[in-house]
Length: 285
Image (cartoon, rainbow, N blue to C red; front, side, top):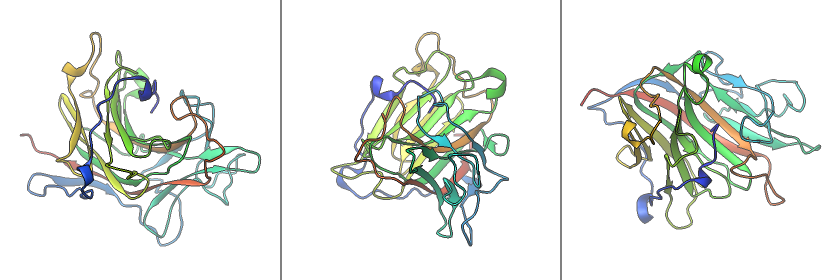
């Protein structure tokens, strides 16, 4: 997410389903064990579980010239409005991340992370998400290394499982970033067939993470569309993904170098809905 945009680099497009309906991802029970699951259950609208999720807050562009101010749940710091939260768990069983525009043309949204609370190394990681659509919206599901406070970014490593910009809602981008390979051609895309859009329905976005290997899929772990290993790196690149655990980030940006700003056709509010985030352990082959 914090990087030179993928639109400036080559990408490999893959047709998802090629006209067939997307198949929900089910873990191969004979090979995997569910290690952790966040299912966003609530009887009434409430804050995301503070034992799992904390918030990045504020403005400043976040390294991408983004336009939003990120707000914590219940924040009264302007332009945040606790009466119109930018993130909440609904009684419908979804995490809602909401991009809003107020009467003064201020953009607000939310960026949640599990830093210092939940982190993992290796296994199969998956989230079921429904995207927003429209010019200027940039949802993402990604990971950063736990050692970011010690080594900073990009040395900590970044794993972008899902990134979609609202102007091309039929395309998902998967990429990796680290020292010596930030903004280079280490991103690939997967596209829905025909006029289908990721914003039309929920899809699962996953990563299979093993020593010296990262693979991304959409809707089934059998549908891998991007694989990265140390040999994928350019000369001088340092593979950071076997150095320890990483934490999750879920966010919905507004504007930035990659998607560009909203325009007159952009509709607010827009929501990124998250059904679950899950981690399965995988035995050695």
